[in-house]
Length: 521
Image 1 (cartoon, one colour):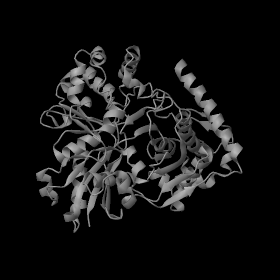
Image 2: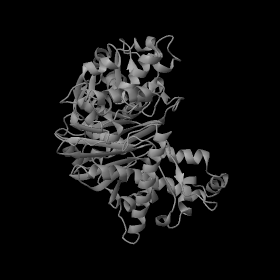
Image 3: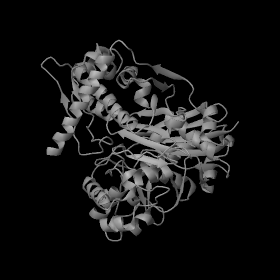
Image 4: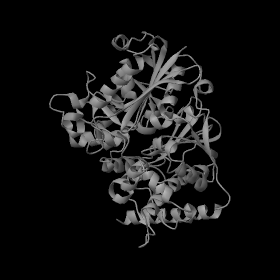
């Protein structure tokens, strides 16, 4: 038997699995929440990330299977920016920098670099930079250029200590191998580097800040490799610590939202994959290049070699529902949930009757908009409340806002000639919430296949590990043995087709109105 380890770094916790490559069976799994959680300013603790990587590896190798481990792969939230000095030390661990804001790890959902993003975007359009067409005509404050400019503008002393800047998945791979290898996913979708275009033009970068072109290329130097390719071998001292062989392969790092496409087998034309969690990620593959205004990512070899990967997403799904729970749900709901030994979410869903008859609508812009449009300054609104509105009515409206936001992405992508005929889904919410997934089927008017797996990203990561280790030649071949084969299916019904179409049309009109109102200020 041969096994691989897949490790998935989410926003609030990390999880690891030990997978049998012969049949995809999860032999061991463990999840650990970050001790510091999400810190103020959407920052994260490097101590959390490094210690949990070690803790997961110790757990997954402290057993009779350790001699069978052939490969390791890590996926992580993106763009979560991690910078190190010339010794490979996290900036936040440099003496005197422990409390400096700009020395900390910047989570994907940190939006403090909005002014730098706007400046970089306007200049890219003015100079007709080719990369901007691959990023949907936009440049997000979540990405590498604005986040590095924020450090440069706000704390020169910290900035001058940077030797390498990583997306989190590449940083963790670097920690395991000691080698500086970059994944094409992180570089293309988040750092504006493309295999055929290279980095943004040096004149463009130097116009942003004098000398920034050379700095940017230096910070992001390293070989760019595809998912499923070998980044190197596990460092010798780590092989000794975990009791693994010195030929244990470490695969290229992977963006967390990109793993589920391969885990669920969404490999045919017309297949889309949706990860529903704290935020949403929609991925699909195309045989051709499609530069789509408003869709923030398309890259050659983006998910699999030889194809173009299209990525889109929504910034605030699970986070939006949690906001409602924390700030607006009456105590009586929580009291009833406690009495029935269930959750407030389930109590609210049980109270919902005739969801197709909902006359309220909302936008899912509680944390801005990632795609269609990409405008992180947008704010959310709820429309249609009356004196008779109940908590479950608002909850339903937020759920339907999530689904309508996804359909906006799908309609835009389809308008450019890309087929989307079915959706495969995974993620914590998809796995736990059949009501929401049925709403997806109804409002999208597409079949939804939810993988019967609680650790979809880690399974996808393990598939890439098996390919990098040479156990299988391609991700598609590895999927046949290791991928998710069992699904819960949700299909649209015909009975309330027109009512659900009206929900989307109303949401679309309201969404456009809110976008215009936000522009007025």
